[in-house]
Image (cartoon, rainbow, N blue to C red; front, top):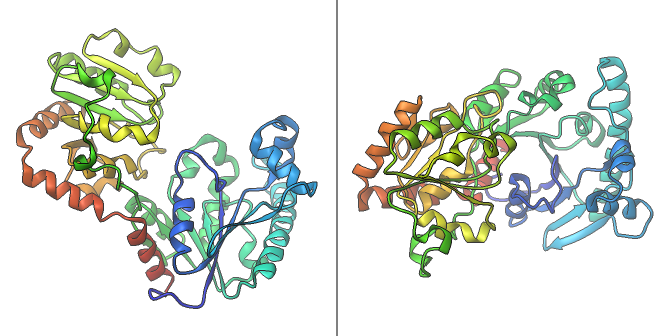
Length: 396
């Protein structure tokens, strides 16, 4: 399958094709479409969402499709179409009874599969590969109903660690991985998890578009709100959520090294808003920034950090921000996890707040042009093309 081949992709996902925060399945859909025909299936509306969130633009879109006011099947570009299924599914995720859940889930899957089949027939797809992006409930019976040439389960987050998924997800995801022809994952941790249920499970890496994270392209002066912050700057870019980040580690670094400036860029949850970090004179919260404006901020950092807190949600996570940090050549310190093992030659990996303190100091001291170039080269190898090629190999 590495050289193309006679397949057409059908992608089912938890995220719509217009998801604004960046999405692996959407990026892969565009990459797959360079060699194959691709149908990206948006999630259908469910009954509870229609009742509660009728004014949400995504729900309104789906209602308009069902009423025939908007097209269900839309061409995005050559080789890529997206489908808005003309159906409403039952809201079943929090049902405790396995018997009732399975009964209703079969009904949902039949409705879902019927809409996909219509689109596949309209497009003239043959030998389809269903690429299921963690859509464990709606896609559970698609292998039986659509009879694809291959059914691939794609794991990119430890979904069942999130409370919302636990009630049925622990049972259903394991069963779906077992029945899949193969599973692929974007982290070593998740590929090992999938191997517990299916020996045909593969680590395929992570794609990332780091083309804008190039220090040679940054010619304007630093942004005004970071321009006068004292060096060295130890920085983080991303969501500031207690569930994912170690507030105590950041506090420890800031208090132990008052001569360092700690710059945090991204939206805060209540825990961060109410933390003592806001009372420290060397900690700067710069708020959320548009994605296109981030490279100049990152370019001002002396060391970039990703102080993840270790829990079920983060332990298998592949942090795309690490590729961005490295692509711009920055010394980077991150929490040691199984997923981070692929970065071990280019990232300082910490197991404690004391480690963070020492390794940031090491990053400041050891930074050389040679190390900078090695980081950039490594990160630029993590392209969506390389990611897709690994997936093709696994399918083949």
